[in-house]
Length: 99
Image (tube, rainbow, N blue to C red; front, side, top):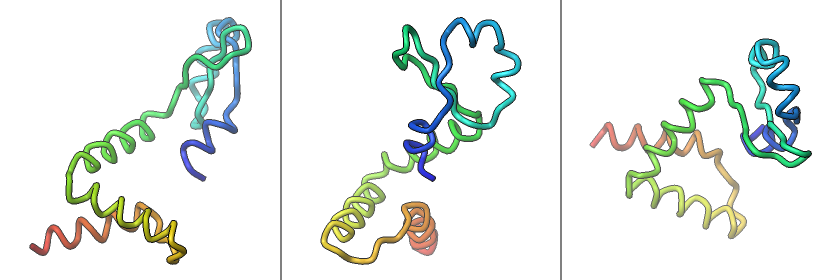
């Protein structure tokens, strides 16, 4: 499941509920959407997910890698069998390390 799908399916809790049950709510390993008057305002993510997102963002800043991802997306849109992004990152890193 993607991060976006996890957030869309996440438990929604109000600010007051979060305040009253913070310790209990933080024990979950799933994303939590904090709402204010029924509207989503914040997302609480597990630490390991935030680290993974940070690593992906750093990799995307690499222009060659960004080009690789763009090429992969274009191929997918043209009907070529898709390859998970994580697998593309691994292949790209392996090629870069061989150079």
